Image (cartoon, rainbow, N blue to C red; front, side, top):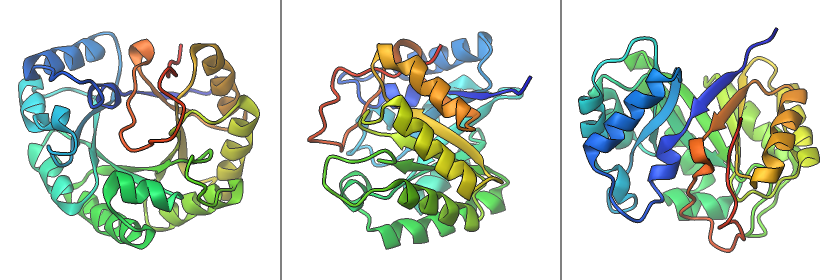
Length: 253
């Protein structure tokens, strides 16, 4: 039977909560995830504390968490300084870097143009290689966007191919605003798998509870074997204003 990789994403939920979670509670929660069997955790981000105050204590969280055996810790970074911080912890094993085919989202989320985003990806991949870390790149707004920016399945597949050509083996496509139905999920995943058969292709979906399982099955049937998950279905998007997604949940069982 073919196995899948499940990445639990507490970081995605935490960063959108209005009240600060104590550092020790975050570390305790991460230990709990490891205890129940999670081996791949999107745990922290190294971004401006002004932009995401909840994640300002990422270094301290990892320090309190302590060393873990056979557990992948993913740290999200959006620039070279963030990558330096993640590498310096000695606890992050994979750098996660957000890309997008939506120019508007890139500007709002990371204050980057597409050209700047690609150049930074090259630099951060080099930093990861030199530090012996893996990388995963995320394609945000991979199933459409609320801004009217150009979108097509082919654009998503081409973006994935560009990322792979720059030396990043893992690519995860994100339904950032919960726009996709199962049929669209299948088409986009299949397009990426055809374009990049050699990469580890993943998906990061936002969904209502009722639609979650059909979307997961559609992605699996199209060839995806890497799935981001969130216990309780909590998630957060800071810079996707204009999208009707407040009451949607992401959950994989």
